[in-house]
Amino acid sequence: MTPSDVVNEAYPITVAAITVYREARGESYAAKLGVARVLRNRTVDGRWPNTLDGVALQPKQFSSFNKTDLNATLFPLRYNKIEWEAFMDSARAVVESELVDPVDGANHYFDTSIAMPSWAKTMIFIKQIGKLKFYKG
Image 1 (cartoon, rainbow, N blue to C red):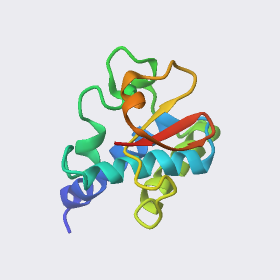
Image 2 (cartoon, rainbow, N blue to C red):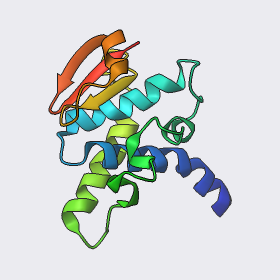
Image 3 (cartoon, rainbow, N blue to C red):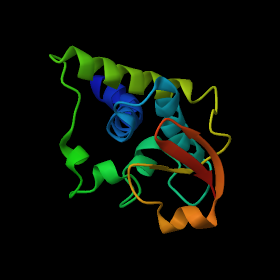
Image 4 (cartoon, rainbow, N blue to C red):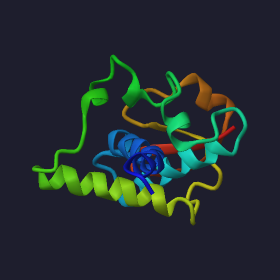
């Protein structure tokens, strides 16, 4: 395996881990696992790309990748032990989400610190984990 093969293989999981880190930073491991599973659930839905990075980088789907979102510039800093551990939890959640779906097929979520988005009113509520409400639709 060449170095570029290793990078190409790791890229989707790395992008997904950054997504989980940004979207669920400060939340429990269960909430991070839920966000990771939403990414995975979307890869098999048909309405989104079929790769983790393709789903995560879809415009206006995960606010932490919107240019105007303050989280868009956040990356885990290796020299900051708390941030690095939070990122590693996010990466583990992405990998573990292959095996378990704690959000029962949810493909959307929102943080309760914001007003309920209009899309949530037309979907099936699945569960709340921490400040994140998960929906299927």
